[in-house]
Image 1 (cartoon, rainbow, N blue to C red):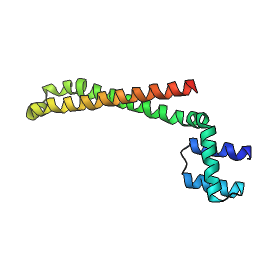
Image 2 (spheres, rainbow, N blue to C red):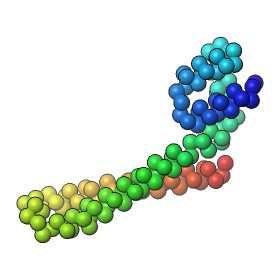
Image 3 (cartoon, rainbow, N blue to C red):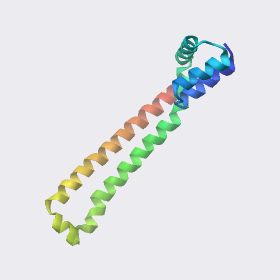
Image 4 (cartoon, one colour):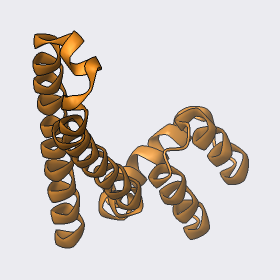
Length: 130
């Protein structure tokens, strides 16, 4: 089939474009019927899986780094930043709720950090090995 059409499908799949829109585009540009276009896209997906994954890598790395940064900020603010407010009346009024709030936020922050690191590791490993 047309190499330009294959490249276009790879680009669209790596950019998470709507599958129906890709099929419609293949139908119009390739002169295929809907089922033929679906089969063509499935064949392109199977043959060029590595190229499609490499196209998706920048978004996944960006999301992973975002999770890591948000987790680190949460961990710092809710553990060290709250220490500044210990002397204020607000913390004394909250009492034990503050401890539970800090504990819960720390658990969420650590989960964000771990999730971001795991996703970053998997994404970069898959990118380097493909």
